[in-house]
Amino acid sequence: MKVKKLMVWTLVIAFAASVSAQTKSTIEIKGDGIGFVLLNDVIKLFEEVAPTGGSFQEKISQGLDQLFREVRVAREQNQVDASFFGRYNRILVVLKLVILKSERGKGGPDPILDAVIVREVNQFDDPVKMSEGDVIQGIGTVAGAVATEILSLKKHLDKVKGQRDQ
Picture 1 (cartoon, rainbow, N blue to C red):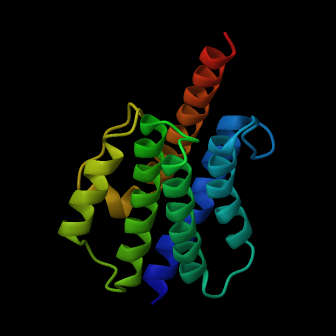
Picture 2 (tube, rainbow, N blue to C red):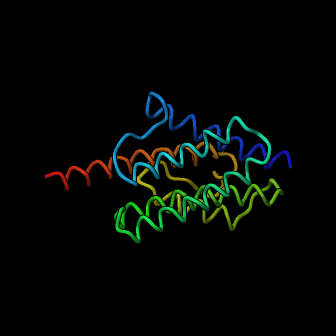
């Protein structure tokens, strides 16, 4: 029980710290449109859960489920492009897998989930590549990769917006 809570708390803190350090200001992705809102919602989910304690895993899991539904609706309504949808979905998958892994409660390596987490993280535009052994020891690496991918998606949205404005 303590190991799984520690693992998720480490993810929450590392993720919030990674985004904060990379944005060098308050944790907010500025821009107009549903894509920017969705990026901010991932960040807010972790910011809101970090100070609350309690059953944070359940809150994060429910929040991720809601974000899955929202991005799917945005894609169906053509409010986000296929690239954004796929990359954002991958962020949510990685975060959900880390939560699922911690909910199993064994605290030891889980080769099946580790392999999937590593595969998904290695699909990010992040130059840091992970191996299966990195997942338990490298939860900060996962959080940093997610934060970097969020910032990369923000650049993608800026680029798409710039192309539309021309």
